[in-house]
Length: 216
Image (cartoon, rainbow, N blue to C red; front, side, top):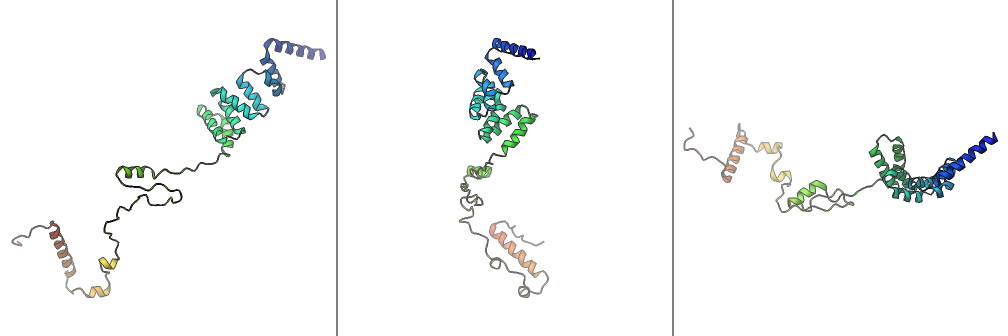
């Protein structure tokens, strides 16, 4: 039994010596000693994985950054471990864009996204409506986050125009019993008065038809 184990060890040693440093690195890694394998690793991606495995996350992240696209998933992990959560989520999104069925990427993204603070933006104006108004020559107020409900227009468009917001009693009369008593007790008297007033208004504006010489 011991002789068999010795033969295996000798064979592994000779194979590792013949294959070079990378073979030894793999052997140590498989044995659960990535820290010993690290100096022997020549492949950048594998070196980054070893650094990540032993907890040197910042160094691993720098290596994955140099490796580039092929290490997108690995860098998403290293970014998360170095506290760059927003960028980590972006890298997971890139992985999922290439393969939306990557369950590990989706699971890890969901976890990391919980540490990303939501971004609350400020509007730079009032959007499309403000742009249209400005194009028409109308001045608009700049958006004030302290006063989000302020008027969109910089100036009331009715300024300088006579307003029609007088009290009701100043422009008309409520139909009270006293007012009804002032009307003549004749059928159609009120309607006749209204029609006469309307005809007079049309005459003044030039919209009334000329009176015929004969009513027939």
